[in-house]
Image (tube, rainbow, N blue to C red):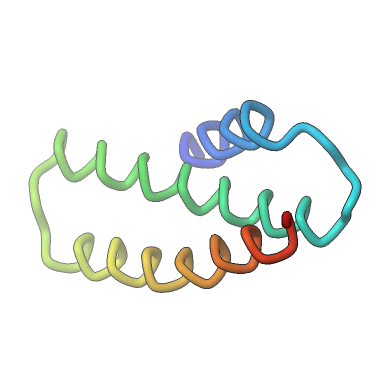
Length: 76
């Protein structure tokens, strides 16, 4: 739940327009995923390293890469 708040804060900090809508969707999904990734990494630091958590980090990075590419493509 904390990751959603981090992601929403990142969204408001870096993407503050609604038009074009594709850029807004890409920015929303990217920022929420970055927020979840930050929260997961903080959890790994505080609770210790578990292989399943690192697998989730890898999956999130794989999902995040095309979202960032999509955002950069529609923004320009």
